[in-house]
Image (cartoon, rainbow, N blue to C red; front, side, top):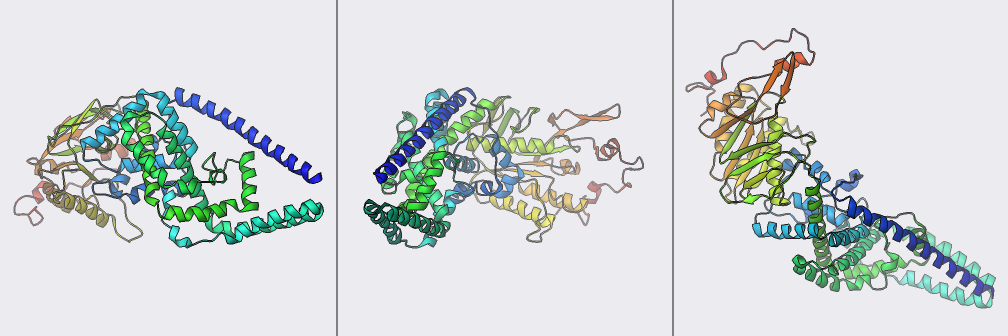
Length: 563
């Protein structure tokens, strides 16, 4: 009788826990759905933990291909911040695929047109969008590591047996049977076995715990992709079919195991049900047993997991792009790929600026930007570069209109000394420029490059001489180079090869102001010394002694002339 009362009490407790948790989850879901309908396009601040963000490129690294943005260009343009600005995704798969998308310059209109179809579908069908976002929210994240970190190291675990864990579970049945005849002795045995199992559990769990987390994520991924299949999205028929095939191959992982693999959230949420399930795992080793059987299935079907991640991430990225467009206060446009080899932008701006000044340009060959300090040269270069990248990645430009061709994009703008390798700024810079020159002459496609202050790491005379030669080398039918410089002498040395544009400032009543408007022609003023004075430097700060004109040193016959 005592044993029966004990079992009934435990059963009631379990039902109460599950019921309370179901009510809580449902209440939170309703609130979340309301937010998805009402607050789309409003970016929620995310906590980008350093360890997690350092692994944001895991999907990208796993899917490297020609034509993607290299690390120099990505860092020059501060693309991490652009990624954060448009990261409306709700799962690890979504944000890793979004990162991959921003670094993968598509070279096919067909790819971009299909992406546009998916973006527009979810923009025009809010119910379908919300269903996908709910599935993504349930999928969640993998913690501080990427799923690929675990998948890449599966072989380190070797073959695993569950015989010991099954034997310990069998002892519970024996002790429960003993309790029918001697309740006190049976309960005492169960308590001792529970303690032993918990101790053994933590010894083994430390080795495989990260993988259990990843397996839980894979199972949620299977369920979330299953939810996608139920949503009618005509433009994603092929993707849905790939999902069905992949899930079928992975069914062996799901069978009889999902409930112990954190079905509600990607990370421990601290709710009563999660705590209860943790104790179930510790006592009965259910997750350890299922881990071993799942490991065997997974090793033979890693490509199917990759397929699910890719498709789910693709759909979530399309929704993130739509929300990003909705959030752009100053407008956006679809790029037009006309194959002309030109770049034409009208009223373009940088998406990270709060109050941008819009500019436009039409360029069919190199562009040389001059202007005084802080006038807007670097910002304009970044505006052009970022829009070129967005055109071929997210099919969206922050401009009134944008016409272009398909390019490979490179930059050399925000370099610094490499302390790890002991390389000076100059060495780092000439290596960065060399990679652009190499790309320009591979014959693998048109190159669009952006260079800010060529060879700033060396003396003036040699800088102008070498810069002239390098920029002349980039005058190629398949290359458009945008270069900014303080060296006005370059405008004359390169006037046959580059179109000149400039930014200028206005000094009035002892103050300096910039309109940040792009103007044709070369700059005619400098303001470095004046800025020092305006910033409160000693009035004795003067212009350097008069020196011979740089152009005269570079004239024909000069030892330092351009050869």
